Length: 116
Image 1: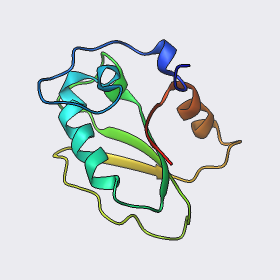
Image 2: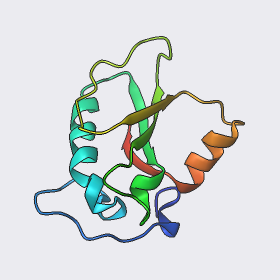
Image 3: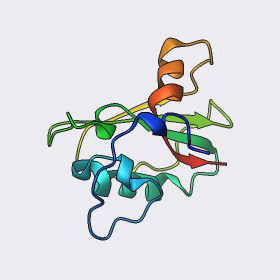
């Protein structure tokens, strides 16, 4: 069974040394940054789910693109424990309601990076 949205994603070459699950779905320009971000947030036990979305998953991604990530927290009031410096702009969206249009788009097109 494919993760939400993965059926419509591109299959990119994976950069040497990159080993996170579904790295082939992330544009090569962003793979190292996404891996660093994933390692940085993995220790935060308040994160229930993290989903990558936006240009990092598309051919239009460029060296000036940002990283868009949706993070669902168990306790929405608690701040994220640690976000590593990934050398580009990072847009973090947290705890949207299921009836939110952006939430629905993320569900359709996003790449799950972390689920607990």
